[in-house]
Amino acid sequence: MQIGIFTVGDVTPDPTTGRTPTEHERIKATVEIAKKAEEVGLDVFATGEHHNPPFIASAPTTTLAYIGAQTERIVLSTATTLITTDDPVLIAEDYAKLQHLTDGRVDLMMGRGNTGPVYPWFGKDIRQGINLAIENYALLHRLWREDVVDWEGRFRTPLHGFTATPRPLDGVPPFVWHGSIRSPEIAEQAAYYGDGFFHNHIFWPPAHTEQMVRLYRERFEHYGHGPADSAIVGLGGQFFMRRNSQDAINEFRPYFDNAPVYGHGPSLEEFTEGTPLTVGSPQQVLERTLSIRDYVGHYQRQLFLVDHAGLPLKTVLEQLDLLGEILPDLRKGFAEGRPSHVPDAPTHASLVAAAGGAKDSTVYAEADAATGTSDRDLHDPEVAKVLEGEL
Image (cartoon, rainbow, N blue to C red; front, top):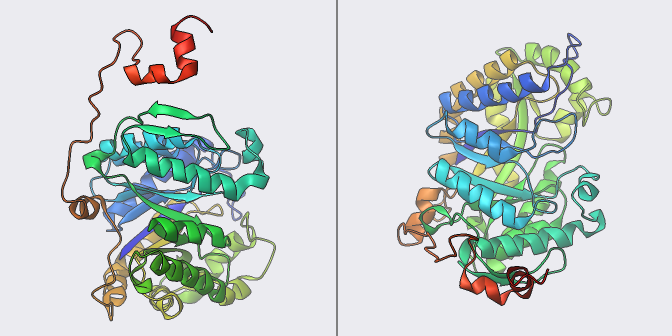
């Protein structure tokens, strides 16, 4: 069981002081939070991807590479990679490079995001969101597994004899999770490929989460990847802890009441009753988190949102210390009753072992020293015209 945290990178005023951190402060704080996560023994740090204020979560590969250089063990993940608006060729290259730099400590969570205007910003049509997610991932999947790709689709220019570089580390692509809150098509996509399904269980009630996870598990088995209960499931969640539960409630209430997403809506009490948000003592967080298995079964990854809504860095680091204290009991509780055929969350090492061992995936292609063009590029008529001086 992997236990970790994720950030959406919001730049939000602290409602108790009125002060808003600068982008620089928030970016540097993200790095400190990730380093603290490794220090307390967590398994995963993940960052979202946003391209608009009030967020600092653009360029996730830059952030993760910088964190990777200052950590040794923690898995670095995206909490959303915008498969709809990011070019799959660039994703293939960027995350394979990150995979090499971190010695395999990287995976991705594909998603459509929650910012509608991002589609036209990157030249895409939001009405094609699901279709973009399906087609772009189909291409990405091939780019990481085929040395030479010929491809044509609806949403980008064709590829003729294309090789994405660098090739995946040890011949094994990063593991992919498909993230969704409400789209059954994405659960279906994850099941079709035998990838992981991540349900960000922070807004909706347990019944909705149970339904989405059950659909993914059933389709995972349908496609022949193994029994339904062996499918790879991850969940989001959130908490706020203090030694005394009433202290936690009193301290967190102004942050909840003014949070960008759910602030000025349901009360804190209503929200904690209807969603997995737990505000209270460490024991309450421990028991509530372990109870999630009652409706989703045994799963592989639990990530918590802990640094949003204007919480100051000092408070976030204190939350991580408290999470570190209950971490052994969380691990013990998640292990209890877990059937032997239910797999752990995939890691680079486990994927390499499943592939029969590491291999050098470098493509040693001969190329023209001046242009970098290989003979196969001449089969692309547009490239050939350029090389022949016709364009």
